[in-house]
Amino acid sequence: MKILACDGIHADGLNLFKEAGFTVETSDPIKDPAVLAEKLQQFDGIMVRSATLITAESLAKAGHLKVIGRAGAGVDTIDVEAATARGIAVMNAPDGNTLAAAEHAVSLLFSMARHVPRADAGMKAGEWPKNGLTGFELEGKRLGVIGLGRIGATVARKAAGIGMEVAAYDPFLPASASGRMSVPMKTLDELLAWADIITLHIPRTKETTNIIGEAQMRKMRKGAYLINAARGGLVDEEALIKILDEGHLAGAALDTFVTEPLQKDSPLRAHPKLILTPHLGASTSEAQQAVSTILARQMIDFLKTGAVAGCVNLPPLSAEAAKEVGPWMPLMTELGKLANRLVPAASSLHITYAGRTEALDTRPLSRLLVAAMLGTASGRVTPVNALSEAAARGLQVSETLGGDGDGFDRLLRIEVAGEQGCRSIEATLHRGPRVVRLDGVELDFDPGAHILLMKNEDRPGVIGLLGSNLGAAGINIINFSLGATGDGHAIAAITVDREVSQAQVAGLRTIPGIVSLEMF
Image 1 (cartoon, rainbow, N blue to C red):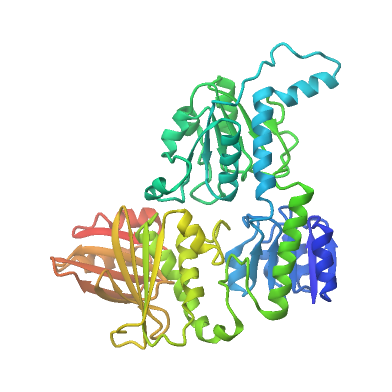
Image 2: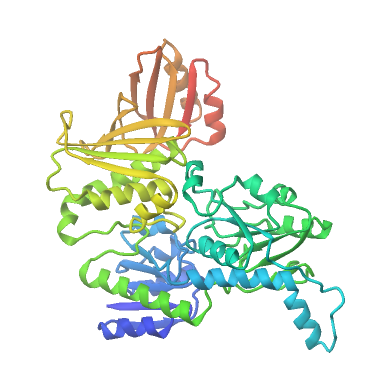
C-alpha cells in the first residue's frame, strides 16, 4: 500500500509506515486541487498538516484512497463530508499538540505584556528602546478563555498557575455545565466585559466565524488585549485594525489568519499594536513527533485490520460487529443532527434500543449519535471521544437496551432535553432509515432528506396554502406526513426536493394557521 505525506510530516511517523511494509512518498504542499486529484489516484492514504487543502474536487478521482490523516487536531482543511460520501475515513491526532498550542498562546500572552517583539526589533536596529515599552504584570489580571476544550483548559490551568484570575465561555457547552467546571463560566458578553485579556481556543465553524467582530470588541474593556492562536476567521481582522486604531483595545496577538500564508501587503503586518506569528501553535519538535506517530499507528491499524480509532467520521468498530451495526450508522448520524436542531445545547440524552437487540453492538451507534449531536464537522468531537466530550460539556447520556419494539423488529427511541424543553424521536430501518414518531405523534419521513417540520392549527385550508406557496416557488413535495397532536394542532413532516431558503421559510411562516416552521 502507498502513503502520500505532504507538508513536512515528521520522520518518526513515516518510519512507522515503512516498518509496516508501506511505500511512502513525500511531497511539498500541493495547493492545486486538480494536481492533487491526479496524484491521489495512486495512493491508499494521505497524511497532511495544514498547508495542503483536501477538497471535494481533489477527491474526485481518488478511487483507491481509503484514509486521510491530519497530523494535528483541526480538520477544517479537509472536506469531511466529501470524504465520507466517498467512503474515505478521516483521522486526526487531537491530543498530540495540546501542550504546544497552549504554551504558544501563553508565550503570546507574555510577549504582549512585556512588549518583547518591539524591544527585540529595536535592540537589533541599534536602538535602546526602553521608553514607551512599559509593560504590565500578569498576576492578578483577568484572563477570559473562549473555548474550554483540551487546549483552552490547559491555557486556563497555566494562567491560574501564574496568579491570573480565569473565567471562560464555551459556545459548545450548555449553561447547565457551569457548575461542573473548575473554571467559572460566563456568557460571552459577560466575559468580554470582565476580562483584561481574551484568548480564543475554539474550532472555526459556521457558527464561530467572526465570533469576535466589531460589536464584540467594543464590549471588551477599554485597554484590553486579544489573542487568537486557534483558527483564522474567529476574529474579524478588518474590525480589529479599526478598533486598535481607535485605541479601544491596547493590542492583540495573532497566530492564525483568514488567509494563510498571510498576504505580503496585509495591513496586519505593519500595525504597531499587533504581534504576529506564522501559525506556530503546533510547531514544536515534540508536538510534530507526537502527532505523526499517533496518526501513523491509527492509519496502519485501519488499513491492515479495519480497526477504527481517531476518526472524525467513523465510530470505533470491530470487523465482527460491522455487518450488524453498519446499516444503522447513517440513521444515527442523521438522528443526532436532528436532535441537535430540535434541542440545541442539550443537557440530557436517553437512547432506547427496543425490540430484538441481542446481536446489536450499540456502543459505536450511541457514540456516533452523540458525535453528530455535538458536531463532528469541526473536528472537535469524534465518535471516539464523543462520550467524554459529552460529559465535559454537561450532556448526560444514558442508554436502555431491550423492551417493546411496538411492532418493529428494532425501534430506536431518543429523548433529548435542554433549556428549550424535551423532545422525543422514534426511528427504525423499516423501508430504509425512517422517523416514525416525533414527540409522540405518528409520522413517517427520512431524516436524511430535505425536511420542513411544521406545527399548524388543525383546520381546513392550511395545508393547501402551504402546498400552493411551495409550488409557486418551484419546490416539489416528495412526501407529506401529518399527525394530529390532540390539542387542536397538528405536526407535519414535509419532504421536498431541495433545500428551502431561510427567506422562503420566513415567507411560509406568514401563512395563516402555521404556528412554527423550520427547515431541516
